[in-house]
Image 1 (cartoon, rainbow, N blue to C red):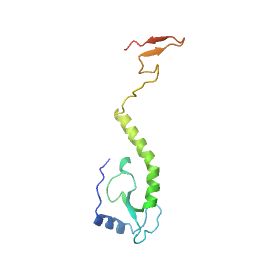
Image 2: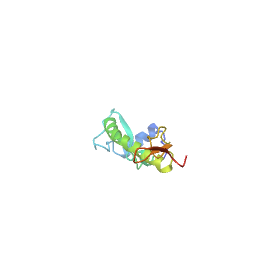
Image 3: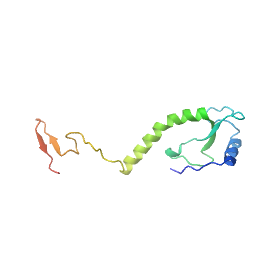
Image 4: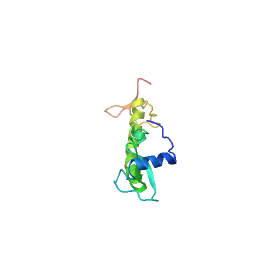
Length: 117
């Protein structure tokens, strides 16, 4: 994941003219004086690059709708990465008689201490 860079006014104007002043999400024309965002086609949190190939102009409303859908995907990707790296903190309250419990329950209902503790 690359770090997000701030975009200067000159860079925003260059991106706007490079893409013909159209929203890449709805393909609509961005009118003069209308608010717009620089939007990453592939979000940075999902491995997208912070370069001209991944940055496009978009209406603010279109950008918000797209980002709203991406939030759950980004959260899922972060959880998977943490689990893959083993960085996820263990549960503070283990389930009763689960693998992390000091006790186990036999099939007949008897509760005994685990040997590995």
